[in-house]
Length: 279
Image (cartoon, rainbow, N blue to C red; front, side, top):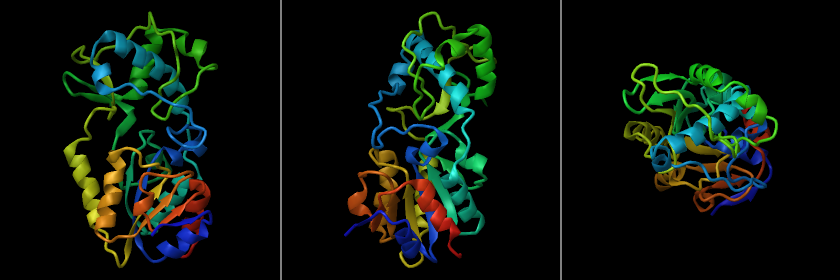
């Protein structure tokens, strides 16, 4: 039976003395100014699918025009108290591993060393033809040269999504760049909707969950509604193994019936309280 609470102290009591694997979602990064997909008050979003992106230049132009504006903002985001608390828990030996559904890279910036970026990283770009991976900042400079003034003309009036997609409506005429090595199609190094997470990455996540035991381990979910199976499957695996599951999220989640405890509160204050308790 799931216990529902708004008291961050309940997390400290249940998790005291346990080794943790953490699964994070977009709700963890809202305090860094990055909006989430499904939290209370979030507007409906329609992210581009993989099949749409590979359909041709029209879709790719739309994606990169919107991402060009969004990345100019997203690259300035800093880790918040929740990211810092989790990094401190890792340094203290409490967190054995972290699985993030986020693509913003803020866990690494906060100092985490054992992170599985389940859905990839928005600060990297991959060529669909030759497979070369490059930094997003390099592409940003190339797109700025090809489209002078585009970001300045739109950045003040549009909202940005968790994947860096800015709500720019007019993208006709935006010039896209090909791979600098082979002139192939460039794609952000993230998993689009309709695209499969690499099998080896999924296996690493399952291995982390399998390393937990009911006696001294727990799976902590922070800032995820668990709406998509990509993250929910690890909650199900922990529950099947009898490992305690704790969810910290504002609003209901798809994994509520699998959790031992759900805290309906913000990630920053709850994780901060957990990091502040003696190890």
